[in-house]
Length: 366
Image 1: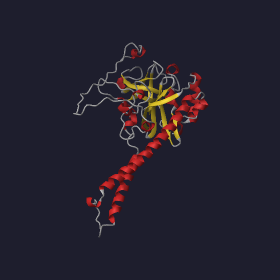
Image 2 (image 1 turned 30 degrees about the horizontal axis):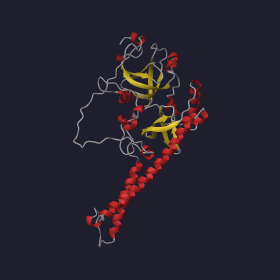
Image 3 (image 1 turned 180 degrees about the vertical axis):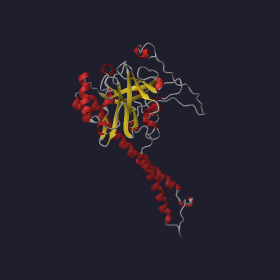
Image 4 (image 1 turned 180 degrees about the horizontal axis):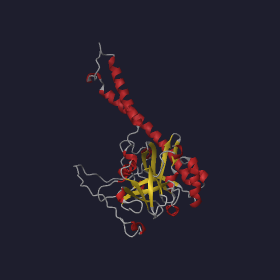
C-alpha cells in the first residue's frame, strides 16, 4: 500500500465486522419446557457464580465485552476452574465417610484383612449415603453463609467508593493507592469527580488475571447507569481497580499524536489487526499492523511489530481470526514514536503489558 495512504481520512468509509457464521443447531429429544419465571437471585447465589465449572470468554457478560466496555476475561480460558477449596471439601467428605465406614466394620473381621476394596457386605450403604449427604449439606450451608457475608462486605466497598466526593475519600477503596494517587489527582483536575448512589450488582463474574483472583461486576446505580467495575480479592477484602473504572490514559490520544513522544508510554486501547502500512513500516519488511482505538475519542493510532518475534507470536494468539473475520481485544500496550518518524499516526509496539485494562500486579513493584 502506498505511503500516501497515511494522509487519507480514516473515516472515508465504514469498516464492517462480519458476524460469526451460524452453526446448525442439533436438537435432542426432550420434553417441552414450561413458562420460565424470572426471579431476583439471592445474595448467596450472586456471591457464588461460576465457581463450579470452567468459564469461557464467550460466557463473559455482554456489558464487559469489547464491543461495549473495557474488559474481556481473555485469561478465563486458562483458569476460572473449580476453586481448590471445593476439592479439599470433596476429598475431606469422601475420606471421612470411608474412614467411618471402615471403622464401623473392622472390629467384626477376624484375621488379617488384605488391602483392596471393602466387600459390599461390610458397608452399611444407607448409613454411608446419609452421612455423606449430611456432611455435604452442612459444609455447603457454611460456604453459602461465608459467601453471603463476603458479598455484604463487597457491597460496602462499592457504596463507599461510588459515593466518594473527594480523591482522598475514594482513594481508601482502590488498588495500589500510592501509585494511583497522583493519577487520580491528574485525572480529576481534568474531569470533575462524580459520585453515585449504589443500588445493586446486576452481573457478577469471577475471573483470574495472571492467576490472581478478581471479580468483574456490572453495578447498577440510582442515577440509572450500569457501571463496569473490577475488584481484586485481597487478604483484607476487596479493592477497586480505579484505572479501568475511568479508562485512565497517561495522555489523551489527541495530545499523544501532537507531541509524538519517543519514550515508551502505556496506553489502554482496543486492538485489532489491520493492513495499513506506510513510511517506516512497509509490509514487505515483515511488519504486523495493529489498529488501536480507545474510549472517548475517534482518533486512531497504528502500532507495528516485527514478524517472527516472540511479541508478534503473542499478538497473533490474541488477535488472529478466521479468514474474513476480525477480532478486537482490550490491551494495555507499551508504545513509542520512532525518532524522526514521518508517519503521523504510526508507532512501535514494545510490549503487551496486559490483555485487559488493568495491571494484574503493581507495576511499581515489578
